[in-house]
Amino acid sequence: MKEKMEGYAGVVNWAEGSGKKWIAQRVEELERVRAVEEAVRLLENIAHASRGTARLLVRENRDSH
Image 1 (cartoon, rainbow, N blue to C red):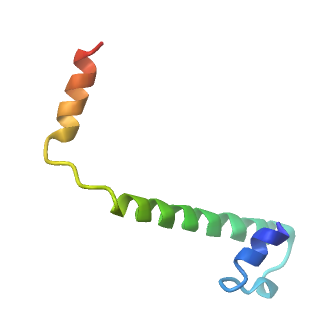
Image 2 (tube, rainbow, N blue to C red):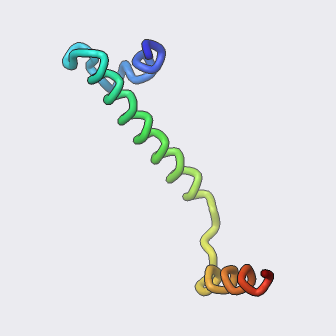
């Protein structure tokens, strides 16, 4: 947990909170935010599919079974 806290040292003032439960909740929250930011970054680099692509793929999948 200490290593995770050190990773967020510039983001969180750990002295303002108290208790292991608060620290664990705060680290978990920060990790969720970081995961969402990473997902958005990855998705920004993916080309957009043309209109109707999802419908076509679903039909192809249904027809293959």
